Image: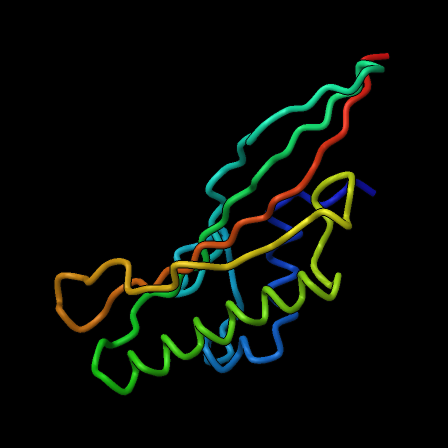
Length: 148
């Protein structure tokens, strides 16, 4: 069986959040359609590379994702509930990463870190009543290469 892609790993991980359904009202994350909730990959980058004396290379990398929710009304009650979810979810992501319960992306799990940040109302739609909330998720990890 083929190894899961990065987006599949992150989607499956997010679906384990015990209070996700409170936010999605029972609609699960669907990263490949126009539903109200989604997980979008924002690409990966190499932060730096280090070569050892034997010619091996460690690439320090970061993969970015955006979790979004559409069509929430922006009245005070709903906005406070949504921001509350984003705060709880950010803490949950950090806890799972610290406890080693997050998925592995690289070659050195003990050095991996998953963080969530910048949860906010990203876009207000033309109707003035709905918008897109977005939360950024970053995974930092190592990839090891041997020049043999």
